[in-house]
Length: 182
Image (cartoon, rainbow, N blue to C red):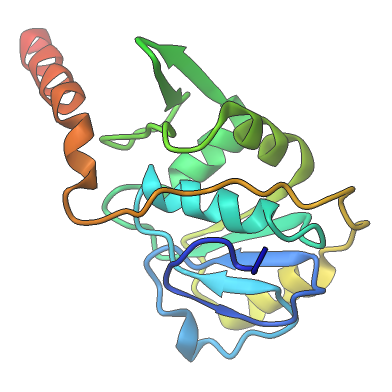
């Protein structure tokens, strides 16, 4: 299978590198980073994180994910860190990132086996909010580890401007529960 496995806003560096970099809402193209396998943005706490998981797992050389840059309005960085720390909870057939403060922190488009493997095999480096290319490069260069046993290939459905609508009912429930508390 061709790598990266799914589309997105990223650039591919050295596919043999053990590091992936997510710059959240920051423009990675101006940072001049090097020595990474893949570097790109992640704006959303659901489809965006799922695409990161798919692409990271599809390259068995990657064992470290540096999460840095300006946080998005959807708190994708905070959600990634919550995922790493707390995992997901399953309720009403949905997988919600436990502890996420995002509006729609649901990872329903990829299998639970992929999420579990990501949590087990990938080290997350927290540089959320850090936009200093030198500091980010230092973390990239310090990431070491052995190649993972094998690539974990999963498919990712195509995402478009209407994909979020599957969560419309959950959004309404969340809004109503917040109104009732006031």
